[in-house]
Length: 307
Image 1 (cartoon, rainbow, N blue to C red):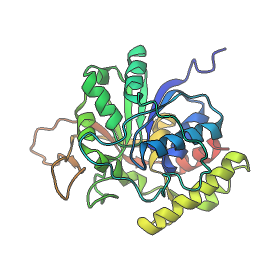
Image 2 (image 1 turned 45 degrees about the horizontal axis):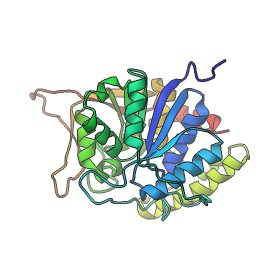
Image 3 (image 1 turned 120 degrees about the vertical axis):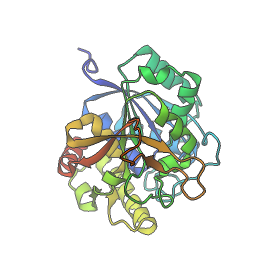
Image 4 (image 1 turned 30 degrees about the vertical axis):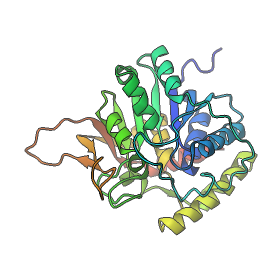
């Protein structure tokens, strides 16, 4: 019997990242996703580092999921890397392999979508450079995607990179703008809901002792340290796992349709997710935005799945 027959086809586009690592683990172990590929994009760290990190996670999970590297920088800007994840992008992980860069993530994304029209969901948990390139090369591609779940944006809360912008959008706002305007069903998981769900070390200690849980604890210690120093947060923010969890339990999310545009020109508003709020203005709702998440359900399922 084909174990993937009833699973949803998924592409994970990512820049691992501690929270990216948890998101990959969550989807790989959930049993609901047939992960067609993991594609990497520079963001939290260099393309070499994040691809090394992705390989480390897949090896840790002992999964044959294909891995392809992608964009080494934003469409038009210099790469701005994250600081909370440390020098490697995944500090705390014992990464010994230097993964070969294939450089063909954009082509792989397009071919998988073309081969499975209307069936594949994409989880975008890094800068959207790979997706933007795919959409530019193949303008009809967005219409063939089942759904695109994006971790990004700040609606009514401050940014975590500048005053108004979330990191993924800030790194490549031009790419985010292209994806935002694309004719594809988009679900946005913004900082507004991510900020409310924080796990502590005591939560991760509840995982059954395995090589995976031991590795998770080492990574989370470094992640929580980075967050405490750089964002004054006590605990581990679950940014990307919340995007992954949407595919596992969409009923845990309350969504609101919004008309959103991405700021690409502003000097101090680079990467801002701008919502049309004027009551009298003509609105063009283009994004479903998560406004509430059942944190208890997430935490319960997260710990259960990672056992």
